[in-house]
Amino acid sequence: MSDIEDRLTRVLHDYPVEPSPDLFERVVESIDADRVRRRAAARWSLVGALVVVAATTAVLTLTPRSENGTLAMPWWILEVATNLVLLGMALWLGPFIKRFGRAYAADVFHDNPLTGKSYIVLTDIVYYLIFAAFILFTLQVAPNPDWALAQPITDVTAAQVKFELIRIGGILLIIGILHGLNIVLMPVLGRLFSLNRRLPDKVAARLGDEHSLR
Image (tube, rainbow, N blue to C red; front, side, top):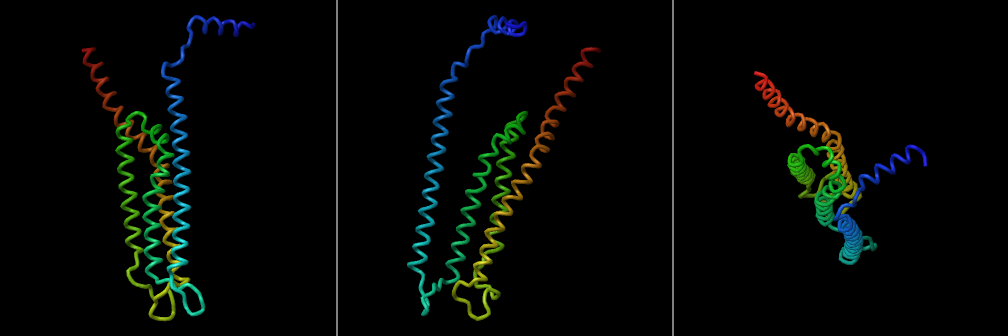
């Protein structure tokens, strides 16, 4: 054995490191939590596939057809379906992204975790307000004259499909921009909150030192 190995052996022998008494329980809990997450992901994937199949079947069977056999879906059905998709994305995609950012937020607000939790709750409220405003701003209660040249518009047209796809892309863009700004601004705000918390402590300590010197 070299001198370094001999010294390390003596140090480890003199100060043995005992494993944490709850190490096994924490490992088991982590394995169980991972198993639950995998089951939940598989369950939600199955639910999503069933919803898509059910929606496709309903559209193909319930939508009336024109004389040449093509589907003639009323315009308001696509509008309602798009609004439901937008609501589902706003209520599911935001929390899904936030789930992966909890460790990041905990690292940023490690000095004041209560402030971090309040910050996350406030950002969620802001997100949902922006999502609701976007859906209401783009909501159509009557056919848009630009969707077709022939009037009146009663069935779904290619222009309406493009308009609804733009709405879905718009809310995805808003979600991406908001979370991107949050990733950039969160460390700055965490640093400011930490400084605001440390400054009074330093001032109090300095005043205490000055008072003891007197």
